[in-house]
Image 1 (cartoon, rainbow, N blue to C red):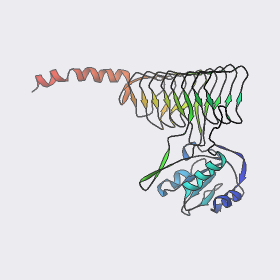
Image 2 (cartoon, one colour):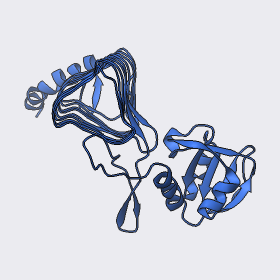
Image 3 (cartoon, rainbow, N blue to C red):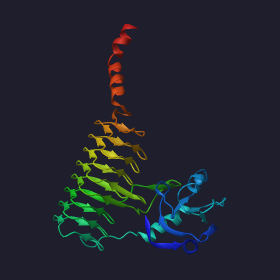
Image 4 (cartoon, rainbow, N blue to C red):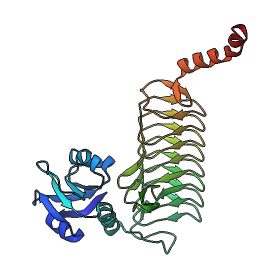
Length: 309
C-alpha cells in the first residue's frame, strides 16, 4: 500500500508515539506486512524470533517492541504495541468508507464500459474501456479493472482480506489496505470471490479466465493467460505463473509458488511449490506419472496381501 505522499520518519515516530532508532532522515513511502515489503515501506514485528527476518527484509522502517541493533540504512521505531501502531497507520491512510450510493466517490468508468443494473461499485474504482459487468456484481474500493474485462453476474471483487492476528484467545482483524488489479482481457465467472490484499495487491493477469465460483485469497498473484475451472480455491499470497491451468475443485494452500505452464488435474490439493511445465494430480498433488504409478500399485495391494498372508 503506497502512501499518498512521503512522510518524514521523524513525523511518523511522533504520529504513532514511537522512539526513533537509526537513520532519522528517511522518508516512508508505503505500508506493508512483511511478505510484500519494498524499499521505503513501513512494516512491523512483535515476536522476537522474527526480528532478523524483518530487519533483513526490503523494508526501510520497522516498528518493533524491543530495542535491538539497527542495520545500516534502516530506521527502527520502538513501540509497545507494533501491530496496533501498524494497523492504525493503515486505517489512517486507507480508512473504511461505507458506501452510501450505488457508485462510490472517486470512481472512473470508461464511457464504453457496460454496467448492468444492480451492480455496486465502491470508492476509487477504475473500469477500463469496453469492459462488461453483469447484474448484481460487487466491485470493492480501490479495484482497478482493465480493458475488455468481462465480469459475470454475482461476482464479488475486492472484499476484505481474511487476515487476523491472535492476541490471547481472540482474533483481531487487520485493516485491509490492498487492492485488486484485474488486467486486460480477463473473464471472471458468476459467483467468483476475490479478496483484496492485506497491504499489497491481488492481481489477475491479462488474458486469464476464471470459471464460476472460483475464490482468490488475499494477495494472490495470477499470471497471464491462466485458466481456472470452477470451485477452485487459492490461498492468500500464492503466486501462479503464466499459462497455468487448474481443473475443477483444486485447492491450493497459502504462500506457494506455482511455475509457468503447470497443469493441475481436478480435485487435487496443492501443498508445496510446483515446478514449471509439469502436470500434477492428487492430494497431496505429485507429478501425474508418478501418481498414476502409485495408484496402479495400490490397486494391486489386496492381491499382494492375499498371496503373502
